[in-house]
Structures are given as C-alpha cells and as structure tokens.
Image (cartoon, rainbow, N blue to C red):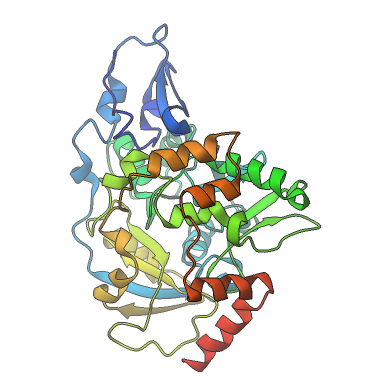
Length: 397
C-alpha cells in the first residue's frame, strides 16, 4: 500500500485524492474528525502517484517555495474595504484576475455550514469567498479542475492556507505563468466537524439561534473579530460562553496536529502573494497616519509574478512598510502556533454530545477574565465596542 503522510503530519491538502487515476483515495473526516486520506484497497493498484505528489512525503517542499521575501505593504481596496474582513486585498486581486477572463478558487460555505473550495467567474460572486473562515476547507477535486483549466491558458487565482497552496503546487509538479497563488497567514485549522458540533451546541443551548442560516467570523463594517450567526431574526455578536469556539481557537487548542509544526510558514513563502490583517500597523517604526478602523491588509509580495499582479490593481491604497512591523503582530508568518497539553481533551469535549459550551469553557478556562477582556465583552453585548473603537482610531490618526 502507498505510504502517505501520517495522521500527525498530514495537512489534509487533497493532493493525493486529486492525483489518483483510479479514484482509490478519498479525503474524509478521520482521527479527531480532521480530513485524512482513506485508501480503497480494492481500487488501489499501488502506482504510488499519491506518494510522489504528497508534499509531506516527497521531500520537495523547498522546490516550490520562493526566495525569502522582503517586500511588505499596507493595502486596502477602496471598493471592497467595507465588505471584507480587513482591507480587501483578496478582493482587489480577484477583481483583476476576473477582468482578465480568469477564474477564482477559494473557500466558501456550502450546504449550510460545510466549508469547501469552489470556483467563481464573475465579480458578483465574490461575496461567496469573502470573509475569514477559521476552519479547514475541503479541496475536493479543485486541483484536478485547475490543472485542466491552466492547460487552456486561462488565468486562475487560487487562495488558501500555505499547506493548500503547497499541495496544489506539488500536485501540478511545475510552474504555470497563468496561475497566481495567494497564501493566507494561518494560525492553524480546526476541523469542519468540530465547528459544526460547536454550532449544534450553540443552537441547543440558545434556542434563538436555531433558525440561523449563516455564520460570520469577522465584522465587515469595522475591523476586528465579531463572530455571529446570521438570519432574518438574529445576527448579534457572540460573546462569553457563546463564543467558546473562537476562545479555543485563539488559545491554539483545536488545530490539526500538523499545524503545530507547520512546514509551510516562514519568509520563504509558497504563494506568489501572502495576505493577512495588518495588526498593529503604525505601532512599530514609521507612523501610519491613516484611518485603520475599516481594516488594513498586510501584503507580502514574494516573486516577480506577485509584483506584476500588484502593479495592475486599481482603486487601491498601497504603502510599503517595514518587515519588522509586519512580523510584530503576525507571528504566524514565521512560527507555528504553540501546542497545548489540553488540546486533545478540548477537541474531544467539543465533539462530545454530552458536553455543553458552558462546561467546556469552565473545565478548560477558555474565557479570559482580565479587566480589559470583561469590559470589551460588556461593550460588545450592548453594541458599543465597535463604535467606540472607531472613535478611538479616528483620534489616533
């Protein structure tokens, strides 16, 4: 049988599933409900194509990484800033690719709360891919589709976590001038199954959310975290026990094992462009005398292809910044999130039908009770946190 990455090292990127010519591999929820390859022994002919394309097993990760990047920029899109999680860098890049007749691949909600990669071809569909999604998306057969389209000469923008970009490049096996890859600065990925278990607990414990049809992790009207269900009757920000998922996320307690020893972070990036929130801009080095209340994107330009794309963007503000400033509050650019001995227990608690969110928060001390945190939660509950934050940012320009 083929020897793929172990349950500890596998990233769930999907390269093996996409390359198998006999459809003998499926990516399914496995250990701790994270996405893992399952080999159908009746279909497998041991051609070992999956081994050759697995970026963890084949030892070729460095082959598709760029030289160490030195270019960091602050950016926002004038068109997309108020409808995006931060400054709208992804949307600005996607608009350019679509204007060139290209296709965009990114993470979207499907069939309720399933996070999967999909393709879009027009600006009107951009909203499907906007907004941070703090869990792992399923690639399905996107890599196979992308290769087929690239051969026609059509431009493609693929955005995903660094390990997903690494998986795509390993699957393709060569560079394509008509492929632009954007990797996001990633803390780590929880499983979709854990996220859905959290939502089920939330709906059971708080009946007013039972008819909710959507979920947003971020505030699109002001810069910052503001997880909330969306529906006709309710879209209040989740705070306290209701926000247990993001408290566990912020404490790095619910990521897949490979995230704690990420093989794709560092200043040698796998994407042509890297994007993130520019947290802490202006707090280190050169002052930043602009309004940041609506969000600012951090953009790392990693090669000539990335440089060209950035030069083609319209209606954007872009300013070069120091790399030390970019790294100050975005440590996951170069380092993995810390592993906690509580991780396995917390994951099992979220997956357990017998555990409530209040029990999980209490047993694992998920809620921080510093004076600052208590005040922030109170202001969020009464819908004053973001208006006050906006005023604060305005006064500090």
